[in-house]
Length: 486
Figure (tube, one colour):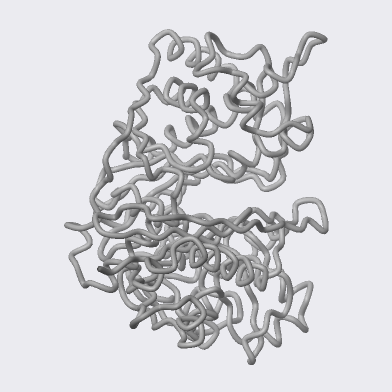
């Protein structure tokens, strides 16, 4: 019997899951990560903490499930997208990685689009500070000595892959978020690289997410007691890997992720760019497939911020709301703590509470945060609709999906049923393990990567649908007012 390991290099933690026959979840382990914010709007991590956290998580799996870990035949990787990990000629990081939610390169985005007018057509995306390429333009301008010494640029999960295999490799889905990939052609673009004073020598080799990228290094196989060869799959960016975990690989299948960031994701049969509403069009982690998504930069991050501010654990805050609210909160929240992607593409906007009163309490603030994130998802749905894509229903994934109240709010705001699976909390790590399985076995991904059983469905409450539609109309008027005030 073979088993498969999935590793998700997230923003707040690294998660490792082990699956067996029938994709049964054998075990999981998590190791926490810290984010550094040296200046307002900046967000960085030490790349070597990803390796340390990965080692810790897999070591814990070995301690709990040694025999099952020894049977691993395939490993898949998932990870936070867009992070710029700059390495020297000896593969050592030159500086902390600049993360996906870092807004420092807003000016460089305009500069990049001026250098390469065909950027949006090639990438299917607007140049935004979250993407990787503008970060390199910023580095060349503000840290020229670092830029000059940069030999390779890797994404977070691919730096972990380098440690696992010794190979510089990335997959199509994660690389589509760099602004260096010709997304329709699924290949590096010399024109886009030239616009950032780079070339293909700075880039990793590309594989599909289901392909073998390399073998686990012998010393790591020995450390974890693996009995045979373990291949490492190309894997995927966190959203594409979560889609694989949900079986969202065929056109039209969608999911809503309530992770640190929020994502409304839909699979597509073809490259379908539409940048007018800041919708992302990326390669999927399975061959010959693409996807669109709207992004909320601070989803669960908004709840985590409230939790830190109030000094109360997030599950306790949301638990006080029960299974579902009876009406919208009297307070409204704009979840723009780190700027926003879809539909505003605004790195400078910041969040706000509106409607505070002497009687406002923790419960009202918590509900307002959950609703504000849900309204931002409704913005994403509208942008997808404008791009010609509808969502009939969606899987709910991510840490926020463990909150019954949040799912009830989101279902009502979107007016769409949300399906929850037993493996929903595994997210990208479970999808990564599935990709590891396909790489090891050579199975057809479209036959193998089917949706897992639905544990329950959260249907939109008709009374809340109507109430939230009215509240959403008012909430939408707040962004232009806030923008004007700032």
